[in-house]
Length: 470
Image (tube, rainbow, N blue to C red; front, side, top):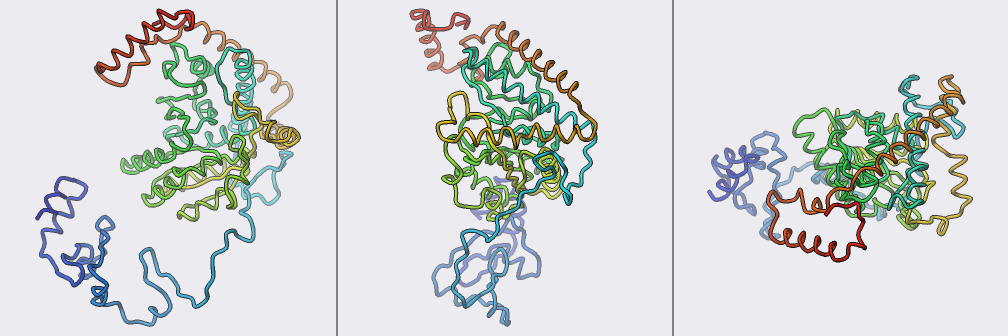
């Protein structure tokens, strides 16, 4: 049989070969009856792998189908996916719920625990202090590296100011074996996993120690060692890739999940919707974390979508979702910790919407005061700052003091200035690296392009940096 021969080429369909080799069954309107229907007729539950959709040859064929004769058929429709109740009322679903989805938090803006918080995890001193120290480190990295860009020492930079809690607290809740596919505002994950300040600086300066060999823009970090995919500029392309990674982890029966991040603007991309549906249908262990910071560069969320934020979108695809205060480190830690537990144990996707605010400009190429009021920025910077909020909590527990704060910030600043100096001393990767790592043996057109580039640099040497070997 031609179909059996085709299926034999695919190991995944080997069980089908056996079923198709059994005695065939004819049915009006179906021709050859699919094995799954035959199994159903024999009282066995059909395998989902063989639920192949079939078209009726004509509307007359439908008359030959015999449905069970019971009263339920007058009340509901036994449709794929479950029974659907009938109604005699013409009613359209509302575009929004009467009440907005609540936002989970543990600490108020002053760092005081809420009286009736559902926070169940015990965050001990060692973990709490580590989370706070890494948040401060990330904050200072942004200040120093941003200044270096403004001094002309870096070509580009992008900060995480105001979003430190999402970075560090989510990283603390994950395991090192979890695979992270970031957007571009999650360097805190790498920082938590042990990526050094020197490694950050090497990437920013694109020197010979940069793992990307200077071929990526600054802040496009990546690390195989830390299970952190290299940042990619196009918005939301990492989302479907994350589902693929998660599905691979599932097939290999790994005790891990994939975690991917995006901004609110990323949810307007088709990749976001395709990814949620893909993850739900394949039941892949992936956690989608959306940093809803109110602005997609200069586009306000009111111009981004009409739904109640992002969390509500998960329900449409059959995905469990939660909205969390992204400026509350304890709430983020708690939510991601439980999300990972559910995702890995039950092998399902989870969507987390973290409400936060981007205090800094979108990047060094942006001036956010052109499209949002300065008072708004200052309010979030001073009154809703995630670093300040966590500091009040650790201080109230007796785990932190002014002396420790001064010592930490002084030490980090010193380290940052040192790694910048070291990164600037290192040579740039040879220009020939532009043509490497694609083909085992370079193609003739690449060889010719490399020759032409070298000749162009030789003729116009004054237009190219002298510290880049040809």
